[in-house]
Length: 267
Ligand code: 5BU
Image (cartoon, rainbow, N blue to C red; front, side, top):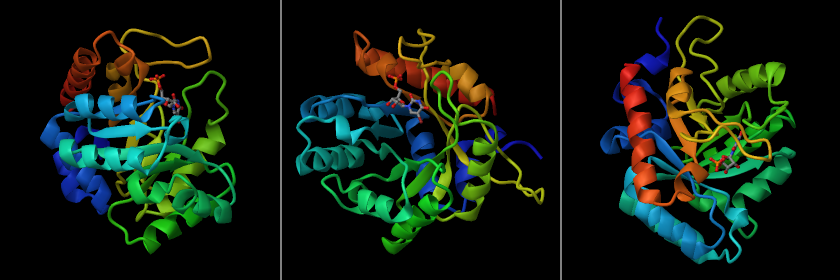
């Protein structure tokens, strides 16, 4: 049985039971992009400007909404409008890590109201399965179909402890929540077959993608679009390689092309 990554996004969309995954693959096909922009800008103006100018080239915009210094409801309203206009999803890289009762409050409430605007969130299983159970419950309460979780199964930073049993357990827990867990943030494909031998299709988002740099002074480690896709990644997350480039529009087109061509070579 071939790995799911040998199928096209369109074929996977057709087979996949999760409506948000179908939508995501649909966007990738329509726009010919598997790129996720990590828009780590720190003011609303900069964030919305980059989302507007690069939006046509990306499938997903990833935020760290808590680094926006002038955050207000206008920030997320602006992002939502741009996501609709340019046909991309919003992924808040919140990395939830707490007991279930707390993460439900962090996800649904507070100043950020992440559940209201972010299609995708991520969480670590370090606290145990309860965190995913809690987020799954919040998603199902809100009516499934347009919200999903990526389990943080690996990290790109040097010396990461998200390896071995932790990563294996991430896959085991993911299997139990098919209505809300879309897949993983990981450096590579983690599984294409369930323990009983049937095919399974988790979506893999890979951070730490950069065409020209190997890493930074604070432990970040990069791979290229080509190596990420060859390892079974489905969506490439790039930040500084794009938004900090001299011309971010030229850079985003370069990353889009590299990611899409690498994907097509694998089919
Ligand atoms: P960069 O500028 O491409 O290095 O940004 C990478 C982004 O991905 C940044 O927002 C990180 O917080 C995020 N990230 C990561 O770099 N590595 C990881 O393992 C995870 C997230 Br999970």
